[in-house]
Image 1 (cartoon, helix red, strand yellow):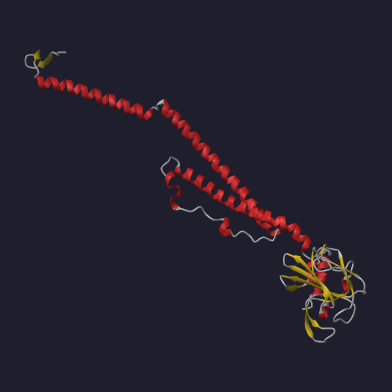
Image 2 (cartoon, rainbow, N blue to C red; image 1 turned 180 degrees about the vertical axis):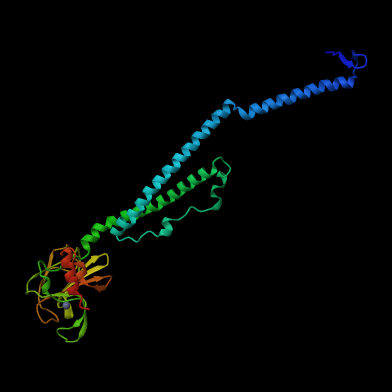
Length: 317
Ligand SMILES: [Zn+2]
């Protein structure tokens, strides 16, 4: 390609042909090339920034979907968290208290998911705040569910023995259909009717006629059935779970040591053997080898009002 160059001469008022040097010709070509490259690059950049490639469009669409999905997940985790909190509340206030289980310490229930840098690798992804928050919530919930599941396991174990415990713990009166007014001596310090001094009375006395049947107050095994000093003819039943019951001043002993008895089964008759001023049954309940107020265990025989009355009567202190 060879260009012919003209220049307007103002003196001659004519176009005159000029002959540029090679250097000038190269410069002209280079300049045109440069302008072309600049315009091309500019247009490309414009297109790059303002128009997405089909692949970019696809990725953006997917990202949007994932983000929306994360938001849905986050909301669902919040909803499940509420349900879990409700389960925890019921566990503490209903199930655990029903089985007399110790509460699960709040420090364990609310234990956080440790480690500051636990979510570090998530920091560099887009929308990291939402992703980290969602992951953290899910981790926390997993932890709480683990604690909750352990609590239920414990309750299942307690439930297995609960029925047995209920059957064994002494929880009726040793005499049937006995008016509470027949209870002559309560549990605690009292003037001894025979010795006439202040002594600790470790049981409850019921004044009834000789020969009245005496019943086992819970399932258990007869530990002893024999004459036992001041108690006279006396039956002791071991109920297991740390409970024992004792029936003193009997006339006839109808059970032998080692014999299994069930609640309500007759074990003896009322007498006036041992140290006593008249016919009565002296009844004791021991919890872990310590005498306890037997009236506390009459709840299966009595309605709440009667129970309250007998508790008042039985407490001599
Ligand atoms: Zn007594």
